[in-house]
Image (cartoon, rainbow, N blue to C red; front, top):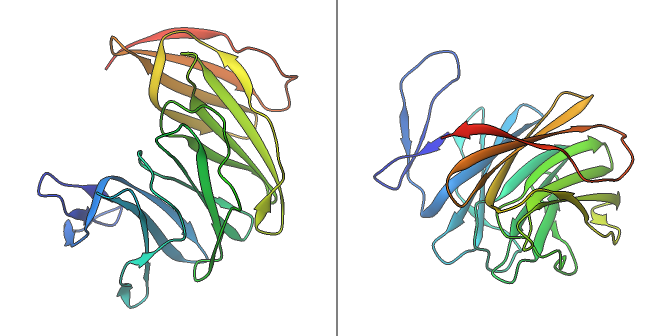
Length: 212
């Protein structure tokens, strides 16, 4: 799924098939995740609110507004156990979220004041634990691991991962043993850090990975 220059969303099967246009009033890149054989798609509108739609056996559902306030970046969507977790950043650098079954969503009771400077990445590390990675207002990156009781996360504090001059969205890839974190600096240079799963808290070692 991707957004075209015409502002619409375009989708196609991964293996083959033609691109198909999907009318959507959103803005920016969508977030997608598969749960119980259905594709869930979350998009942000020009006003900063979020819409959710599902593709099942009968095609796409109509977009449904989600119980989140205004946001400023593309959302992150992850499958955690049998639930979906949505996270996005506000203009104040807070992270807001909602947890859902696919049909019903529960908004987190309060924004998380973490000082985020860009769109977060979200990774499920257990059926009840979510790891959030984001650039922060110091110019570095931070990690926040949330433990859930039902649909709601317990309070937690972010830990710094180091880095300098980083900003904007991050990309995170995990294989069960390590998490590879990628972020740009203001000049467009790409930096990466390798975070071993279960390692003690501490700053990561960042390396230059080229310009993109």
